[in-house]
Image 1 (cartoon, one colour):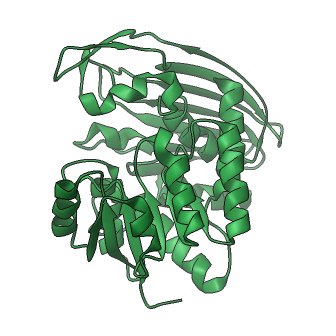
Image 2 (cartoon, rainbow, N blue to C red):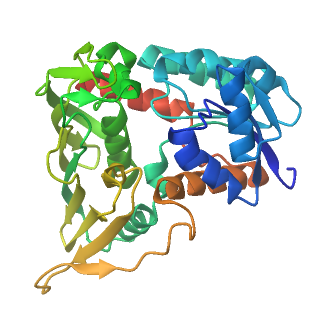
Length: 357
């Protein structure tokens, strides 16, 4: 493995977006990766991104980025419907791939990409970074060590302020279309179900109801009405392979400050992971913000906070779990292991989501 692997980001918007908020800071803080190239659809924005983020190269053609010898890892951070084409460009170039979640609009497409990645023999991972939050890693160890006995049940509640006003930013408009595969069920639902399975084991059976409770939205910049087809509420109940029962309640359009709480009940104690209030409401999502871990055992009159390490000191909140995912990829490449969530994981999760939706 090189001292530092070159990263090429497709979708490196210089003004806003997940690449700027999470990936670029994570890469800049990493001893294992360096930002080699950026790509956007226009020359002006690509050059602006190169200058702002300190990349060596700028492209408008994703294939040229993927083929460049300075690029070892291609990161795909564009709208979900474009993922399949761009991931295939990276795989055809023989490069490792980090694609944001959701991987694809459908489970069938995820299966195709998983097979293509297997044939390419590269590391192909998906951005299910909630697994790498320090509180999650600590909770998983406590559960595995039997600290709360046998898990009996789990309850997860998480909300977002997305869609809490009638007028919404133009860049979010496509997420209200169910066919785009980037709504509440796919994004937050995917992260939530992956986290539940990471902590407690696979889902054996699941039933769910979804609803569109805020059907009227307009593009803030133009006043154009949006045909809302993507659910903004989901209630699900699941039986896990271990026999535990779980309930999941997720919703958009939260009028109050959004929040996340996951409680896990065991025979000898309980765990609770709770979002830490921050100025950025997006950080209330379990995959983005900091989570505090609390424990309650027999004889306790309340919850006791469990100490967890600082995620990644000095990084913005949005980048911390992403940085830890990059660090795991670096270990996998050095040690010839595969402990990052890969495209096969994504396919299984997409299949589960289609049972929900």
